[in-house]
Image 1 (spheres, rainbow, N blue to C red):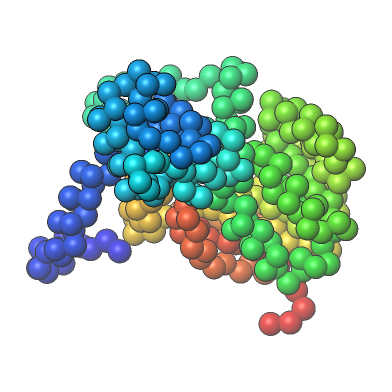
Image 2 (cartoon, rainbow, N blue to C red; image 1 turned 180 degrees about the horizontal axis):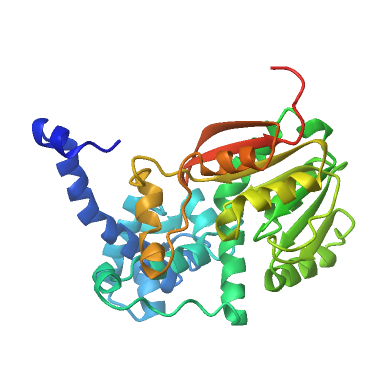
Length: 345
């Protein structure tokens, strides 16, 4: 929580803040160790335990200095060390090797390249040109980053939110607005054979998603449609409409919520999963600071707490419930709007 200037002057300083400042100096070193591991493919070179000398010969590096880096990665928990041999930990294998089932490699490198830009330059220099969204490479990177994030971090949270809905067992048709990947859709149809999922996403992403779905013979269970949710036909009869960290580009949030409501079946729900900034947009720190470089480059798109719930009410939803959700990627808010009043309290 933030404090008023007067209250800040009057209270004693918190020693934990000094410890945090020291930790901030340490934090870039931690990331640089991980980045070295990724760029040198260290995590892919350890299918079995190896010595620093062995890896140094392969990489043409000084074995003593490489051993120091490997010790640092072991201190971070990415590697383990025993009898002078280094090996991936279960976490390192899952999240850092390129073949790991939950590999965060593309997302981590992309986020670092964007978030670790020189803040002073972004503050004082003219804003850089916007990203070229007509470049196919942009969408290739975006798809890889979103898939990595969804598989490794977001999927369990999203499934828990959906499966916690009272109406979820009865739901048959799910609409995923601006999905970004098919990770959630695949998990839903695998866990609930009676359900189908319609993904609506922008054409470059939709084309790639449709190709993957068709290759696995899932086109009858996962329908991929290309379009902009501001203008595209959203269909009819959806039992659940899901929007996770995607409503930033709504031209008119209330109008979009009303369109989603019209696409729901009787008793259907619209579920939004987004951040909610508080304390005059200074908290939570993970969202405020994590999105700072993006905001300095262009619009600050993060939602204020309560903004989406308010839009749902104005759009005519009969009931709106909201609650916070603690996640590995920061405090989020789940807003659930019912097209018609649900039975019970």
